[in-house]
Structure formats: structure tokens, C-alpha cells
Length: 387
Ligand SMILES: *Cc1c(COP(=O)(O)O)cnc(C)c1O
Image 1 (spheres, protein in one colour):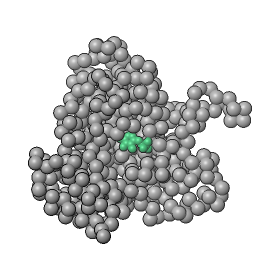
Image 2 (cartoon, rainbow, N blue to C red):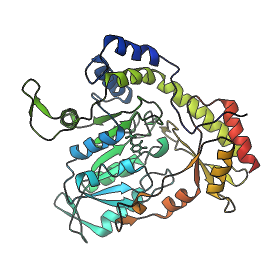
Image 3 (tube, rainbow, N blue to C red):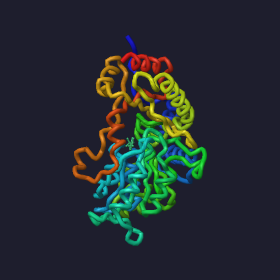
């Protein structure tokens, strides 16, 4: 009987057990201990930032980012609709702010043309504030998600953030390792170009700490403030004085131990992703009504976290394909239901949706684990070609 092929699972083939054991033997298993700081520095060094602040999930990192951005009750925040809900809830609802949903471009990322259209036709600049003419709300920030490890169009989005005085939050939870190899942003990693960026180390991401996240910022005081808020906003450790409402968003030493072993392997993981993606691309693109969606590779090194099979031919039924693969013990999934259609966002503003609706209807994400063998990928290909 054939083995189960999961969509995206952890790969612990390095020093994970060794470093976790060190943490256990030292009895530093909770939020104290040296490994959290070491892991913060390792991520900071990898993405070329002076400082990174660990937290216990990408979602909590995005909540910290929203607080850093100064999002206030009643503000509006430009967010993508084709994304995971944790890009939106922490940056809008947690802050009592309203989302303005925007569709995607062919990178599956926030469409700069639709953002420009919203800002220029529905809003006006009053001093340095962008005001939504219909609601009177201050449009304060924009959340950019680097979907599946593809780099969003950062030159265009950074220019829009500057033009319209928007704080730019980069949800880089899927894109650790994606960076510009050329052009005006050469050397810049996804997550490091906006005001504040967030990574995730959830179990399905390109590297994992079980659960965890990291915040980086181009404002050194924002990073320090994020640390403060993530550690219960203690102003005086001994006297338990707290100078604002903080959170327990800390990463543990045990998780940091896993992270230190994972970051050692990250470039190898990315190389394996590239190899698998090439295999799928060669075998499936243009065959049987399929396309394998490209990553931007002109001037970008993507991490290729998730692979998208696009059902070009209308005779394909997405959910029937998912079921057929499931019957062969192969786990795949559709792209997320669009956020502007979710239960908590009725009647929200939403613009430029055409491509997001199309990709939502036609994408199936294929197995892409960093320990997926060529033989198993070939089995996925064979099943797909027979459908
Ligand atoms: C995974 C993910 C998050 C949340 O990260 P967690 O660590 O799971 O909380 C946020 N946004 C996007 C786009 C994600 O894929």
C-alpha cells in the first residue's frame, strides 16, 4: 500500500534533537535561557537586520506589528483578500479597525494598481493623512503578504506607502529566505523593506519551531517596543511594575532550540523546494489543462514555499481533483477562501477582486515538504496526469 504524502510537514534531519536536549538538560525550557536571544540574532543576521524580536506565533507577531504601526480604533487598513486570515484579524479586528480588501496581481500578492485606484479615487490626502472620503476614516496602514514565498511588487508598494503616508506591514510569514538579487532593492529580504515585518515558524512553514514568530522593524524603537509588549510590558522586573497593557507573546527556549537547528538548514530546504518545483513544472506545466504558477525570478530569489497547480482548463473540477488525490493518499488543498467573504467581514469595502476570484477557484496546492522525495513527487505527478 502506498504511503501517505502530506502537503507540508516539518523536516528535523539536523541538530534539532541535540539542541532541544541541551535545553532540557540545562532545565531552561521556558521563556528564559540563552537560546531565545541566540535565535533572534540568527534570524536577524540571516535577513540582514540589526535586531529581531521572537514571539510565540506569526499571528501574535502581526498583532505586535499592528500595535507598532499605531493602528487606532476606527482606522482603515488596506489588506489583501487572498491570504490566510491571520494577516487580517490581528491588523484590523484586534485593533478595532476596518479592513479595505484589495485583490491580487499575478504574484498572488496585493495588487499595487488596485491600491493606487482605491487611494486616488476613494480617498484624499489631508495633510499627511489619507482619508477615506465616504467614511471619513484615516487609512493608516497597508498589509502586504508575500504569498507562498513569492515577492510582492515591493518597489511599487513602497512608493504607494510613501505617496499616501501608509505604514507598511510586511506579512512575510510564508517568505523567509525570499530576497532581491538585483535591481534597486538588491540584497533586501522579504520582511525587511517596510516599517515592520513578521515571520512565522508554524509547523507548515519553511522552517518551524513547532509554533513561533519573529518581528523585525526598520525603526529600532519599534522593535524594542514590540519586545516590551510581548513580555507583559514590565517596566520594573523586580517590583512587577507594568507601564502599559502587554501580552505574554514569548517564545520558549525549547522552541528557540528547534529554531537554531532549523535555520542551519534553511538554505538546503530552499534548494530542495526549488528542485521539487522544477520537477512539477517540467512534468505538469502545459499538460492535461494544467499550469504550474511561476514565481517571480527576475531579480528575485524566491523561497518557493508553496506550489500552485492552476487548473487552466474549464473542464477540471477543483474539488473532484482534491478528492481524487485524497483517495491516493496525497494531501493537497485549495487556496484560502477569500477573506472579504468570511463571516466577520460582511459589507467590507473590497476592490480589484477579479484575479483573486479566479485564483481562488482554480488553484490546488501540491505537496511541497522539504523532505518530500523525488519518488513521491513523481507519484503525485503520475496521479495528476492520469486524471
Ligand atoms: C501562517 C501565516 C500566518 C500566521 O502565522 P502563525 O504562526 O500560524 O500564527 C499569518 N499570515 C499568513 C499569510 C500565514 O501564512
